[in-house]
Length: 502
Image (cartoon, rainbow, N blue to C red; front, side, top):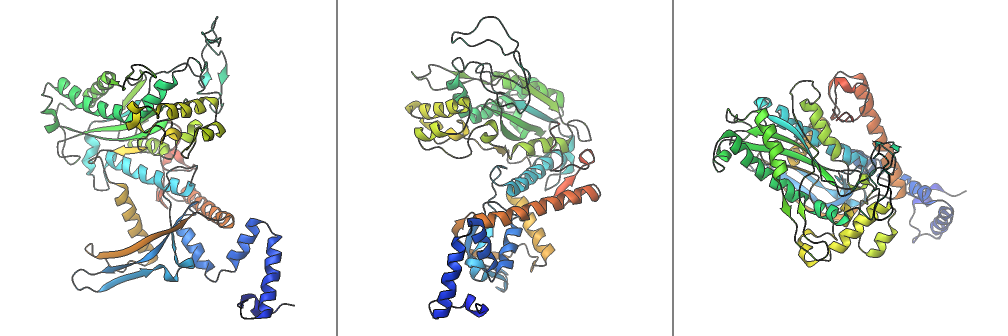
């Protein structure tokens, strides 16, 4: 029988330890990769601390590892308040969250990002996080801006009615079927030959510019309806906004946005008396209809004029428990921040060659869109759109979530509050001075998890998720473990208002 001390002895210093080591390695080769990883983890002398690190990241699927140190000083006395180094950590490194917003890439970080978005959006609707509560009385509108049609596509529910005849490519002019929401045919063109793929990609590429043009137009249309000058209107009201970009099933982005009218100094000041919800609704509709941008002319696709689609929804936001209450609107916006082009059947990583496009496991429609991005990306007149770089996003290179500076708080402030709360709960809050100075030196040393580590991290993430669900089901309404259980969500999961009730 093998002596247990030999298992941890240095095989280079003892022949017996070397034989034990070789026998053990031979047995390890007969195991699978996950089993080998689990055995090696079990032999770690600081396994408990490694598990503690992964738990602190919420079971992040792709943690980032940092090495370095930080020291916190009292700026008056120079006293060292706190010192930390990774030299005593497992592998001399510290695991931190990847902070990826996409649920398909990292569900724990996606859940946290969604919660931060809920806080950010709701603070701009109901106050809090540095925003005065009087903001509830300001005119507020929930807006959805869509893209125009680039060709008929199959739609959920009753599809296009069947019609006699066909198009120039021999395809039917209608479908006549009924499709479920999850049906893969939804969003696919009835005739790929008739579909305007160039226009689709150009619209996605200019979507951010279209949104900016809408914002500029909105001030002008507010001025016309209020009877004030275009230069004077910005001294009377400020448009504060938060928007999220979502991909439709056909692969084109559309915007969901919260618009709020403030005084010129921001949410702490009421807007001019003429600034009402009714006036804002009228200005929103006319401003969106007036947007028209000309794409650079090219022999490849001719001359194109880009506009928003005719489908525009704009509704006032209520502060109570109505259909468009502040909590539900915040949940509705937060729900879409965790999605990406992959939700429309596209890919979640950049493509680097034509051969890779051909090998993509996507629908023919998505492959055609990615291919069109690649072809148009080679045109000199479209170089500023960087379509090849953003082909995996079907040409859209804007941020998922954007807001104006005065709308509400920031993600950085929310993360800082959460870090302070975590330190207070764990008893590691060694000082209360806001003027304390922290000096640190950090470097990136790796990322990701091995197969066995991924298994453990997934189990930790599942345990934490289950704990949140139990808390929401058994504790009173209110904030529970970073998530809010609202009356209409009793027994449900997710953040407040994240139901698909829109």
